[in-house]
Amino acid sequence: TLPEAFAAAKSGDVITLLRDINVTTTGKAGRINCTIYNAEVTLDGNGKTITSVADVALAFFHNANGSVENGSNSSVVVKNLTIINNDTATGVALQVNSNTKVTLDNCKLDSVKKNTYGTVLLQAESHLVLNGGTEIAPTIKGTAIYFNGANCSVAINKAIINADLVFRLAHVAKITIGAGADISVTDTLFNIT
Image (cartoon, rainbow, N blue to C red; front, side, top):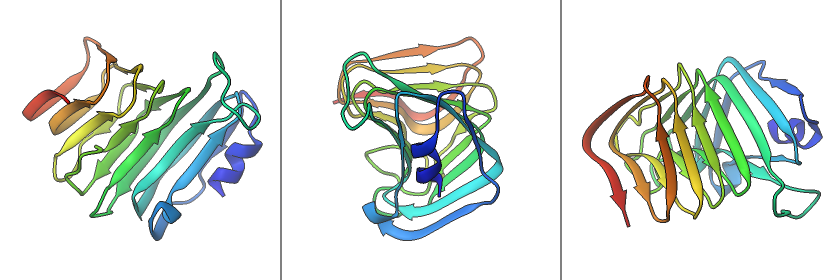
């Protein structure tokens, strides 16, 4: 399974999806939770799709041998992957948890539910980089990226975001928008709660 591959991964490893993944279990039980142990790992989606009806389709966690250590971080580069969450209650496509950095290269993220938590959910001390070819475009528009914890950051480099609400912030966050970013807003760019 994908969680088992991440649990065994060492820095520099590349995990390649060989087939599409279709999750039919709803709620938290259906989440694909991938824990990274103080490593830098690449997930090559190989043009495949993760389709889910869980509350969160794919989540990345940092774990330093069983406990989070200050100053320790894990990172994953996800490339060539489509994530679609068809859950009609929560519908988060990607969740990035504390002390974890996720870089998306040539990825497509979609959620069919117009929800509070967004297509991407960032927890405290998490970091997201959106590179070329990456598109966050929820089907029912809604929120693209929700900052649910303190000290999160997003860097947008030649990525596309198409949503009613692009950034929803519950805490202080750092947002860097590069020259090649294409952001289409049908309602609100920022919502600070």
